[in-house]
Image (cartoon, rainbow, N blue to C red):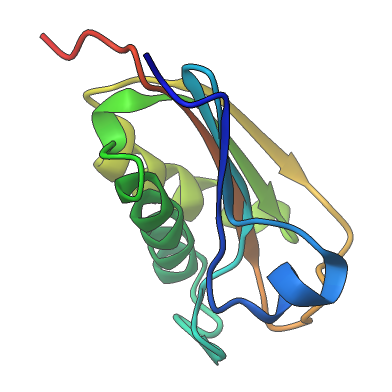
Length: 133
């Protein structure tokens, strides 16, 4: 039996500033909050949407590891972009990471993020009861 609710914090300044968690497990679902392409306070892939997508998804997948999960457990992804021109680059990164899994995916263009250098922010949802066979 899984725990009712478990939260994972990170070193992200947003966890404390706005009172959030990087990931929350509730029953068999694990939700990973919007994740930007930072390692600590250092932006990864500045100016490169493909590298930013890989970095953001990498951080989100790291959060899933806290629950013993990997990409195979991901059932939904959301990708937020600031430029329509970046759809192909971000889609390529998504396919590299999740092509074999094929989660439900959403990609939308937004006006901006809290840091103007960020081109991509992602969210993932995973299922802990997933049959990975």
